Image (cartoon, rainbow, N blue to C red; front, side, top):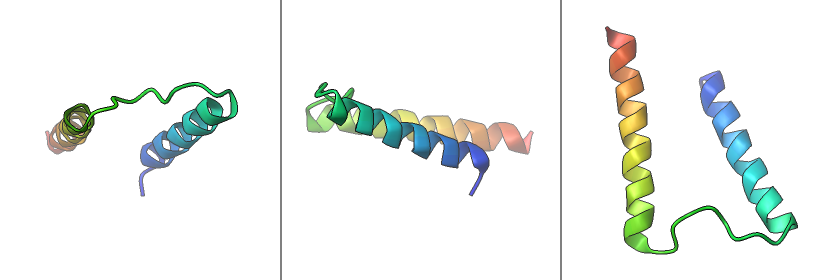
Length: 55
C-alpha cells in the first residue's frame, strides 16, 4: 500500500473516533445517493491520480 493511502485511512478513522467520542454527527451524507456521490468522487480522485502518474 502507498503511504498516502495509509495516512488517508488513519485520518478517516481518527475523524470517526473523534466524532463518536465528542458525540458529533458523522460528516457523511445520510442517504444512499449521497453515499454514492462520495464513492464516485473518491473513484474520480483515485483514477485521476493514477492517470497523472502515467504521464
